[in-house]
Image 1 (cartoon, rainbow, N blue to C red):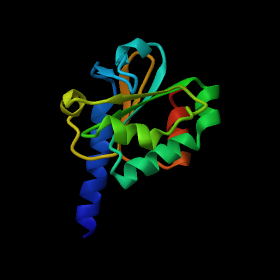
Image 2 (image 1 turned 90 degrees about the vertical axis):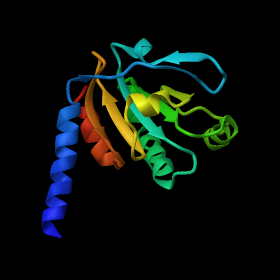
Image 3 (image 1 turned 60 degrees about the vertical axis):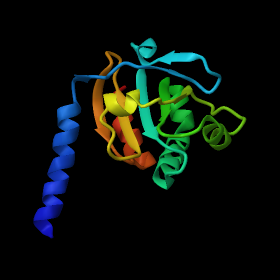
Length: 155
């Protein structure tokens, strides 16, 4: 059991280390209003890219952890891009609600491109992209304290 846990933890560390300094794959997808959004339009900004679905409880939990940091995200001008995989526009709109969060957030609908570009095999997936559009972190669910600590190291 212990060797399996160690292997898993090393795998997470290697995955994150391998992601560092890799260019973030660019994409253009429609937002909830049908307007085109391109990731590279945020070059020069810190971006938190969340990949998930409406039907994934952990994805919803990750969104709540991100929203809990709303004042911090707004103050530090961190842009959140939520990409919904294998979802309907109606389901995403219902989940998002009417009122926008008090920080920069873009919600887009994937048509399969982002899932392939980022080789998504588990959700939620959380990717931190630096100002040069390099991936600084690529991993799974992060609680607000760990997420804030990660963001602090990037600012």
